[in-house]
Amino acid sequence: QVQLVDSGGGLVQAGDSLRLSCAASGGTFSRYTMGWFRQAPGKEREFIAVIGWRSGSTYYADSVKGRFTISRDNAKNTVYLQMNSLKPEDTAVYYCAADLFGLKSVIPRDYDYWGQGTQVTVSS
Image (cartoon, rainbow, N blue to C red; front, side, top):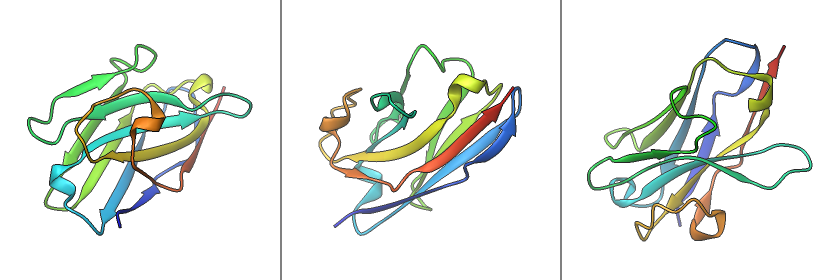
């Protein structure tokens, strides 16, 4: 059983930066494709970024491209989301997710395990 623990959220002002972390346990982290999603109140869960397990290749949603960076440290079983130039519309609960089959999908149902989420609030 894979367990994911999200952390690093908080209340910041527009233009600030935050780094989210997701610590994994209970499996072979280095073999998992890892994604970040977010969900704002009243909205569907939205894809943010994904990083592959083999080459570390990345893919981003257009809404965060150039501002957010996903990375992973397999020695620490942790994936990160560096968020710069935050905007009020980035306010949401952020979730990491593990894909055991390497799909690198943007669809939430393609992911097998989820973190509990961490709240990010950006004030204007």
